[in-house]
Image (cartoon, rainbow, N blue to C red; front, side):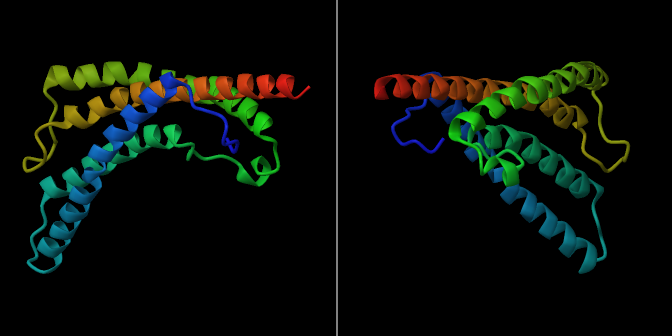
Length: 180
């Protein structure tokens, strides 16, 4: 949305700010991940002693950061698009495509992942699932719980983006009517 006069709706601002603050806090996971990887590399290649626990921790931290980054990308309009085509479209056409994409691609994907993850997560919690490795992480259910949580956050972020798109289209219609 290039137009400077357009003001984001309050609903979207509140949601986007919440997800942004959550992302900023959880971005520290990436720093922890870097230190875990560095420590694991030093332990393995310098001292010849790797750790299954650290390897699993790497995957858990990486998975959590990727799932939460989806929400952040949606609130900041940094999600993947075909920019080759999109750059030539008007702002109005971009918003119509955004609405179509969210309604027909993003929401169905969120629903399928969220719905199918519930039984997956429930079973993991019920079993108190932990690593198959005796020296692995004891809380596998924790990473699995991030799947529905991240999908719920992505859904909220997507609703916020939809509200922004509709508000922008309404604003452009109003601007067009004012200009006549």
